[in-house]
Every structure is written in C-alpha cells, then in structure tokens.
Length: 273
Image (cartoon, rainbow, N blue to C red; front, side, top):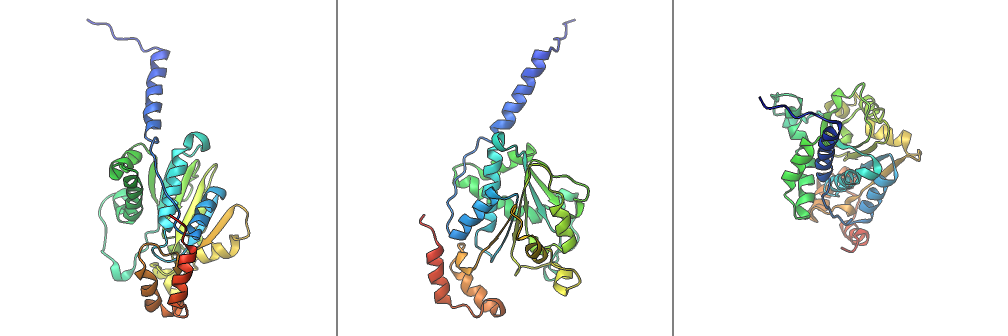
C-alpha cells in the first residue's frame, strides 16, 4: 500500500499562498473612466474623500456609473486600502402600477431584478477596457468580492472593510435609512444613489412614512465625513432628449427652467473628453 504524503507546514503554507495569489489575481483588472461633467468629477472626488457620500439627481446623469467605477477602483487597490468587497444594498419597495406579484426563490433570487442595472453597469465598465464584462463580474461574485443585500435583513450587521453602494436611496424611510447608516463599521465607505423623482415606496408617497433621504441631507450635511452632491438637468449625459422629456413630464419640478439655458449650462458643465 502506497504511503500517504505527509502534510507539512510548508506544504500548507504553499497551498495558502496559491489561494491568495488566485484571489489577488482576480483584482488585476484595468478600468478607465473620464468624468463628463463637473458634477461627476465632484461626485467622484467626494467618494474618495468622504466615508459617506449622498448624491441625488435626474435619470441619465451618471450617478450609478460613477459610483460603480469608484467602487471597483477602490476594490482593485485593496492591498493599499484594505477594502475586501463591494456590497450593493437595495430597497424592495415596488411601484403598485408595475407590481409583478410574488417572486419565487431564495433571497438572492428575489434580489435579481433589483441588481440588474448595477451589474449591467459593471459589465459595461469592464467591456470598455476590452474584457468580457459578464465573465469578470461573475468571477468577482464567486470570489466573494461582490455581495448583494436587502435592506430588510441588515439589523445586527457590522459592515467592515467594504465599499457599500445603496441604490434607489429615495425609497428608504427615515428608520431604514438610519439602520443602513449605523451598520457602517471599520474601514467602510458608503455611497447613496438617489433620484427623488423615482419614488416607488407607497408609504413614502402617501406621507405615512418620513423620507429618509431628505431627513439625512437636512441633518447630516454639516458633518465633515459626509459629502452631499446634487446633479441637475444640465448633467444628463445619457441622451440629450431626457432634459426636454423631464421638463414637459414634470412641469411642477422643471417647468420654470429654460431649455436653451439648460443646454447652455450643459455645455459649460461638460468636461473635455
């Protein structure tokens, strides 16, 4: 009978070293991004400079793209900053007009529809660098470098060594917003993305619950560790049609704005590409 190979301390160390190298190789990706507007640049700087950044603004202004890029960039440099993962947190509020009913499956399967936009953005960033974005993102997920959580199950959690992107933050009530804020632990960074005009929470719409985003901005804006950034119609970069659509669709919000002035300001805000 052949003798079993003895497990020595050196062989264990070698195995652990291989695991570490494989783990670290996942982060050897290259990504590039150039801010298109002054507010995007301000937002990116705020993420790097503050423990918590809250941004609000209209659809198409690049909030998600900037936050996802910054999170990936910070994760890539984990050897220097100690960040171990990116965590996406989502509300599970739905617009009653778009309710598709009960979603089957475990928690991760239920969160699939909510994470789709952010994961698409990550894939797009990697695709732009010449990689297979879907493949890279899946490897990061499999390695535990990207996690998805629901705001409903955060009670008692300590979030350490992580970059946290809180999407659709306008849909959190005051108590839930506080619950998310107070989960921040050692060496973590929060990014709250929001668009107050895309409010889906029934309780917030009806006034039964106080808006957490508005309360947070009112109460926390004077704290040095927290950055607040606001985008306007002039920051919309997705498509030049969007400002005109929003102005006509929401005259109570944007009706007083002059389209020529918006266009002029947009040109002033754009950075040389």
